[in-house]
Length: 593
Image (cartoon, rainbow, N blue to C red; front, side):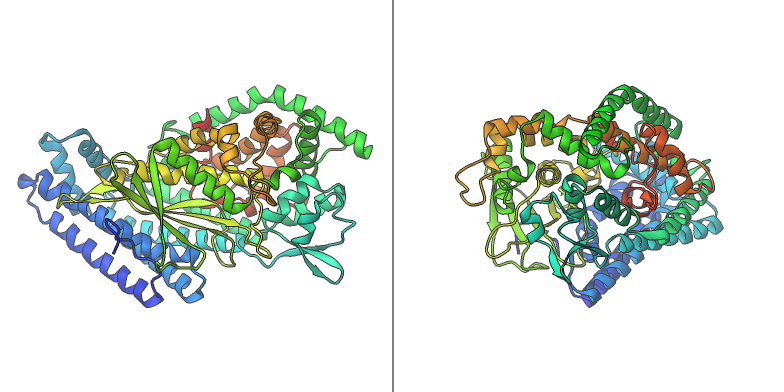
């Protein structure tokens, strides 16, 4: 009942199935109508506009079917959502393979009808999507392509399910956790006189950063580094084989060339050159940084043998030597609620927006909040966003943004406003006290909320160009740019306050220290990212690669002689290679450059 808002949330399993049926029926009806247009009578109104309108109307309905698998506490609803997503993906692939519709769209491009630049771009995208989805293939090859895409979807889902296993943990004594802050230990469940450490990033990263016991760091790093297990490595290797088969069907020599062709580098060779050049340019800096870390380890442990389990711990030690900043103390200035309220205020000030919380709305969980967004000067409604930021079992494990509705013009002259949801896994309140965020988590949430604001500020005419559906190598740039506000005193003070007295914001000196700390050990941090990007690129350009052996071989070459930690398997727990960023992991570094 909200203006411009057609997103359906909190659907039952049966409602999700019925909605998917309606989407498929309407989509088929529209494609049939376009296919029936005689080739000598095609124009924008009968060939292109119906497909643009279909995208505008159906995107929020599709997202209503797909979102529940990421957020719903009900297993039945999650299952219905996953099944609906699979059916819809399969249907849309068939639509994009329809040669009869492709012929009509292609005929329009040859008529030379004068249309605006955004409409011209939309037509170019339509042609490209038909061709990349196999519209020109024989019927037999189309069926094979559909089968391969279905297999890919199934394997993607299994990989993520294995990653989201919240049942794995280690039991460690307080002696084994020496160096950990008291509030961290209090947060751990006690079992048989030991502390239960769940193998999630929220618990693992602080231990790798602060635990003084080298054997504990190694134990945690190994356990976390094999979280997805051999099962996920096998899934990834199978995924890569199927992707190569898919690319060859479409006439490409490998999957990487297929994935990169529409992006800025255009070829996998260009990406490999870029990554190798970056790695080489960083070597001198990273070597100097590693020498500092080895000296610190020698002083503290009398041992210069340096492993991956030592990296985060001694980076923290190095930061403490160079920067007068107590990270444990800084965390006390970032209660979740204060970070969120300060962040909302800052974006309102920066972009002349007004956020208004809408109470008493039906949502998928009682911790979810909904806001409307208004232009502060004109009072125009710009869009809506949901905040679903607190952790719960079964919810998607990473901080991200999902677009629920795209901002675009409809055929009746009305405008759909953008709607998005910010998902995260922030800790919940404990004993009435707001949980605290580590500073990297503050930056991550700020980065993702920048995507929300970018999505809502978009004024595209076509749903296809609404902001989160950007050119792939540009998508991260707005958030990378805005992330810089996390290192400015004026904005940090807005997002902070001592947990026992929120009137005391983080000091100016601490803000300056956080800024200096950001670029410390940048060479080593980027080297790790480059390693995974190289692995992603190599497995998607070559056949039958043993991924674990490849990482074992590349690791010391890229990470300055440090071997892969024995017993770990990065390929088992690196979701970007498996889902969403396959063959294009390079894009984040490319965006930064």
